[in-house]
Length: 137
Image 1 (cartoon, rainbow, N blue to C red):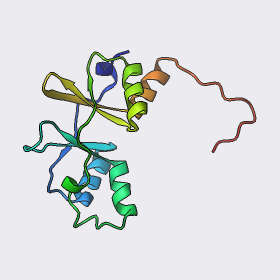
Image 2 (image 1 turned 90 degrees about the vertical axis):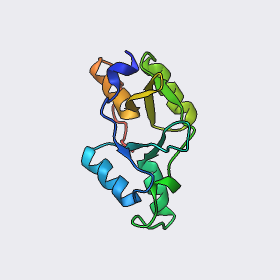
Image 3 (image 1 turned 45 degrees about the vertical axis):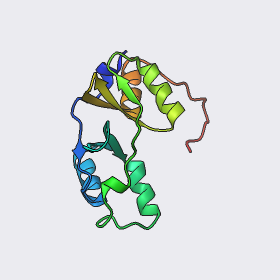
């Protein structure tokens, strides 16, 4: 299965000057874990994720005063639509992140999350045998 089959083609974007609360609210309303951030002074997009928001809260930052510009990730790894889901998952594991912005040339065409990959694999019939008596963590 390819990235194009698992990605969401509806990409949430937020601005650099949005507050962290604005970003969190938009992500919550759309039920997504990341938003793309366009910076006209950068060669490519950035991303702000749930993890970035949690790190800010954990550091005692004000969700109302802090701006997305100060908490986003840049220098992203991008996925191509023709990547396999295995390639995308490998890139995520290797890079330590859970979202990939999907590009077709210079155009953003989607976003792929680790949850999307798991959804595709499980609906494809992938299963995981859990030994009887195993405790959930």
